[in-house]
Length: 440
Ligand SMILES: [Zn+2]
Image 1 (cartoon, rainbow, N blue to C red):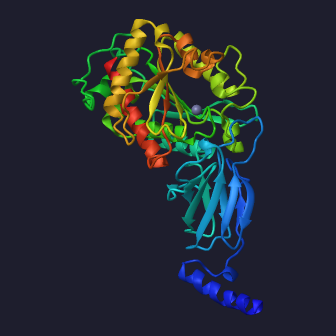
Image 2: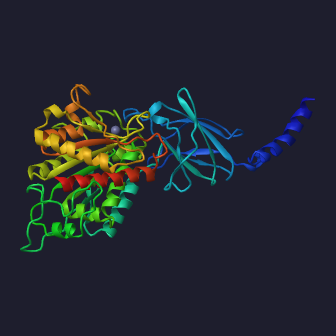
């Protein structure tokens, strides 16, 4: 009897699976998980080959920060079959939707997974025999290098440079856009050091500067104001790099407002501050001996912080650093975006006025999705009593009191938490910067 039931099952199962769109077991290779590539992170608990179910967690990297980043490849898939994977992690490591892709370059979101306590189960119909899955769209040093090369080809003002080498001897790629030099005898253009001249057109929130503005600013002799943009002090927050790239992509575009900003200001962009943890596939946040964003002291441990401080000090000494932006992703329930600033009661009145002008520009330009509603929080002594002065923007405030220094937290746990969604946030942030610089 038993044998008959088994035989019947053996006959019935392939038919049932075929009816459900799943290939018959005999036709399916075994599933395997691969994560030994730059940025890869997965610890497999089990693989149920019959159920096509993988249970896993982010890889453990003791001392390298939160265990919330995951990124792996699944092999042995039959295109068309549905893969199920159950990810166990803390809340930061459990987005509603995972990033999925076939080529490790272009990413889209899976359907929302089903949430249980401490885990989310994602289901995805395989488009290829090998598929990549990740917490969010990965952004690796190769992406930064590719983008910087593209910027150099597209925009004569763009030049790549190496910020520094990490403690593990990896390059930290960086991009600088420098305004064109003034022809001899040309009149000075508006600069950070000089009072801003009136805009060529009324500075309406979305007003496009006239074509004269870039030409006027091109005739520059005074040192230009500088804007510093950096991302990924926390390795798992890949969205920050995409936001920064979106800003820089807009900046090298032929949008007249981008051209006007390029002509007016120098822009420095560091897509990944913590290259080692990004390559390792570690979370980075709260790493040992200290978090990158608690390292901004007189004696920083991390090389990228040391190098950034050197350049920022030089810009501050020249009175040129107008704006400092540090790009992050917040907690899973923070779906809107918001900025952090230093304690306003420690700022001089002109700095508070500049901060308010920037926030006004952000509300006007960052229309979403998700829409920016003006949220500005402070990270002073109450936020982190021991280390608040060692946070990037607070260090910038202390060392360059005329600079507006902000952290942008871009929500990730929603449909716009994709590479394209983040890049659009970056474009709108670029428009904000342009409007703010024009209004100064
Ligand atoms: Zn962060």
